[in-house]
Length: 164
Image 1: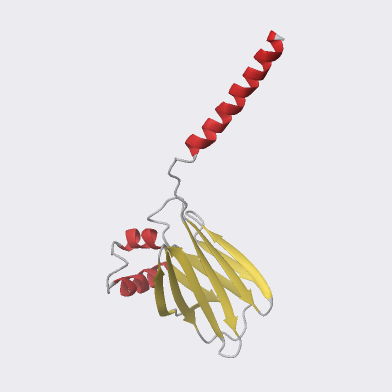
Image 2: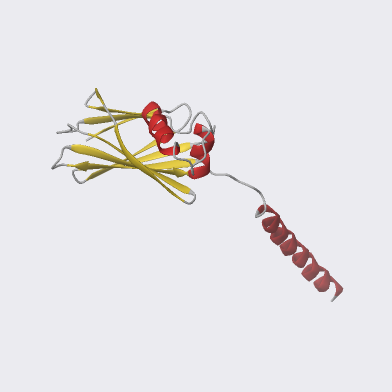
């Protein structure tokens, strides 16, 4: 009987310890650094449209400007133009910034490149937030004529290429 009681107490303390560990871990501040870009090919206008989603605090820290100021969008435009390059079939494409939107903890950035009739290869250089945050991960999902491709960018892997 005493052995059985000690065994139950041992299990109780073991389970309590695990629960306490999970409770303490929930108070740890773990910041996740990522951006997500969706690329859609619009066949009628022969345009690649880009929609990038990133954390408001992260981009404002990187460009060192408050997202609630009038100058924020101009700085985001400059930042994206300096940190995102597109090459279609080996030729560089000019990116046209079409706007941005701050929505709480998220900033949406919109840009495009035109004159894209067919894509054999798409190469992207994406260094968004990589210099500000060493563990930053940037994902790019591409939809082109029914085909889907995904690219992953991080420090040391700033350039990716896919074929269609």
